[in-house]
Image 1 (spheres, one colour):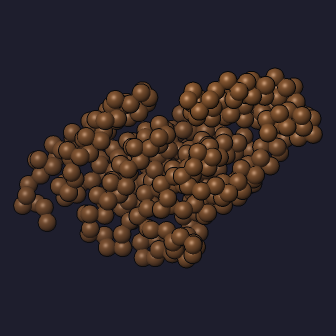
Image 2 (spheres, helix red, strand yellow):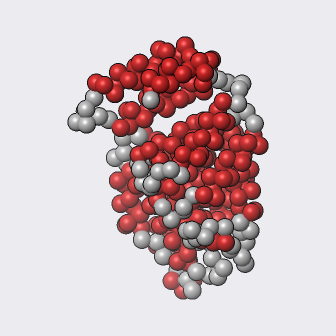
Image 3 (cartoon, one colour):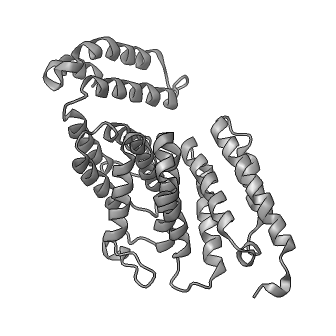
Length: 314
């Protein structure tokens, strides 16, 4: 397939022909040099992503990235979950969409991706979260706009929840979708440019995160629901993707800071602490820094829980 791309490069995208002439043989060489015993999937995917990014740079200013995005989006449904191929496609789609010049067409593709995702499937859920985070690197306003549009279209409110009507093949569980949206906003914050983060971190990012967990149940006085959202968030700390682990830590901290003593009493502090302490051994500096910050928040919350008067807890 790689050799075929090299042969057809002039027909596919003439602006990339010279680069493909140099880089494709290197990819083929890597394939030929390794067996199943020496193969490193992560290294191979990183090489493909770098090849993709170099190609996108060569076609900057054209609609080639959007055409590729449509094809990647279509291919996602061709693979079962979980699979290495599907995970890679989500990643490649995020890197490709970020270079799209026509925001309205990027919006259409992102919205389509949100609707077709099976949020009950861990692999699909993490894939779409990663895709949105990567796209936010250069399209944060577009990404936030799409998330808002999605929330509006599914007619989310505290009195009505009609997500199931949109997906007859696998109806979405309310808590799962809201949990995914919270992590998605946190992942967007993790990936977007620092200057853009300053503009959007309070509103809509933090506002939306708080809204999704506070409106998670039609019955407002259910402490277990908030705790369930924290548990939902903590499941992401075991993700294979470092950015999602960071986003989960940051989101857990946001949730805990918003909890009153009434809700803090419901938390299993030892279990949460163990999960965060495990992340302090993570090889990614960003992950263990995020874990440390969240552990500090957990310590403060733990003290608040100890100081809370039992008489004041209903």
